[in-house]
Image 1 (cartoon, rainbow, N blue to C red):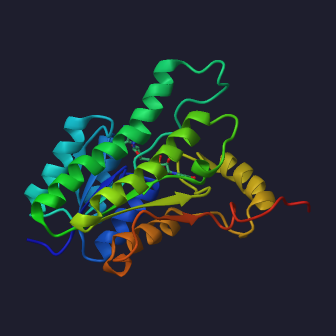
Image 2: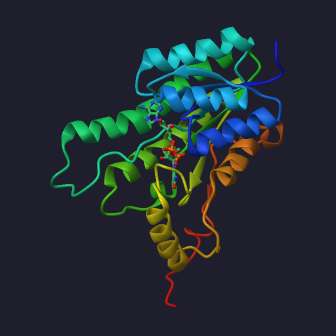
Length: 250
Ligand code: NAD
């Protein structure tokens, strides 16, 4: 039996992968749960984690990944509900209902399922635990274009608060992170996109550097640690001051 074990969804890439790396460095055992078998297997091999092919919108898949963590490591101390997609994009007058529902299934149903099955297993073991949900700065504002995404991420924040209240008696803490623009395949695919994003961020984001997956992983690492013993129902924004800044006139 190992000291600590975690399930990280979307652990094959970006923020999830950086979180797996950080937890492994800190001695955690980790199950990487991801839809992408190729990148998931490679990440797990490189980082010394286990891999499970999971569609986070499927209850059977998420329940299976939680069971895998308990079977393999004898425990589950943390669930990081992080997998995500950009989702339906475009005008609200045009978005297809199936695309809208798929966006909410991958971004919100997934978090509900991770909480449901993760907390069941933690409650059964009686050792408490920590759940961290990856929301976004998009949860805090609207924005024409990714409307389904920002509505779904806002739902993730309130689900985090509700779950924190319900599960506190079991010593299960539930928190969220709100990344700003982080250089990952989801947000910035390729060098040209990165250059364009850097130019936009130079106008809007006070901090001069682009956000890295590791910056968000550090916040997740704190939230699952014993140091966060009294922190629940909260969100940590990791955005280089983007949401704190006023209008930039210069
Ligand atoms: P990424 O594309 O690098 O990683 C996302 C991972 O999720 C991929 O490995 C992908 O295969 C996996 N995934 C997608 N759909 C899945 C499904 N149905 N089941 C299981 N796995 C699935 O992206 P990232 O930027 O690291 O995103 C991680 C999280 O951070 C997402 O929830 C995203 O919305 C959020 N986020 C990202 C940014 C950013 O700027 N990158 C900003 C705010 C929030």
